[in-house]
Length: 445
Figure (cartoon, rainbow, N blue to C red):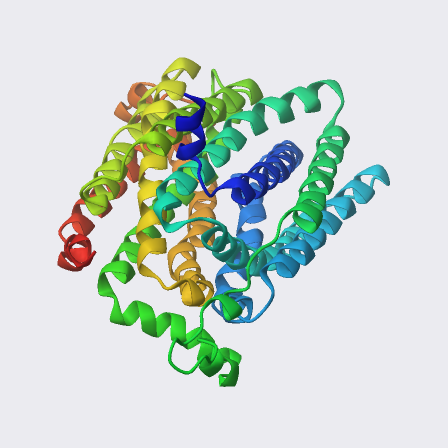
């Protein structure tokens, strides 16, 4: 039994150290973000003001990611990760200082989130390539499943622990916990993890020259364009990325509206929000645990498309039509159960097709294309809740069909928005399932 377990994780020793410590650090960061969203909403009562926190985090990531990938392929991956993690810790320490002195304002969080997002712009491609360098190709699906599992664990634990710490010790304790997890991850990466250099690992077999020799002669702009050119030549991967971009737009509208609904409508509270987030994490944990031990499917593309269609067809309807915490929690479980399956197969699909010496540039081009819709979605979601759907529901009479279906009072407008985006998500899934380039992606394995 022990030998089978060892064989299951063969070649993943160093990856396991990185995965565990970085996951712990991600938990601390997620708890701080969660606590600051609640702080922001309690201070201003605006979905748009809270959504702008995420917009500021993603804006530099989207705008500069394509150039960050070009630089990441040239830089030492370990040094890049250490510097970026330290920069993020300094931003968190700044928040703590402003809180202690009583000077924290919302615009401070916008600025610090933007700086944090800038650091993440360089850290993310370095981290993605590091995983490929530390993982045998045969273990790509298992490594992807484990990363999804840790992300799921973060999702389920961050609202629970953050809510507990907020209730008993306040927001200061959340931030201190975040800083302690950073120290743990930094120490492990600095002293216990060696990341191979792909510039030395990949050499031309005939000339002995580095495979990145041409890249060294390129400008940053030319290197950045290399990633876009790769995607242009590989339409299946490009169209799959655009599919995820459209899904991210719908999901971001959802994320912007969720706190506004659960913190304000009848039956909602901080506890309700924490429980829904906990159920989201629980569903992710179940899905990621299952996919970690499953063999590779015959057709990853079908698994990706069907997982997203199931998610879009369930959760938003239950959030829209349900008016109690148990129904909202059921929606979260159904909506997120197959997301780890989608993420794992997407990750394995990309890693197996994109040459590792190009992954920084290609992944960054992917990040720009796939994630630019996230800040747009948050802005759109906050605007629609505050300026369109909530005012619309306020003028409805008690016998209106909208009041009967979605309830009355603050938060009912957000519920109506969930009903609308449910259909939007289904339409996106059905449209891209018919894309021939995506369907043909499994044929060139």
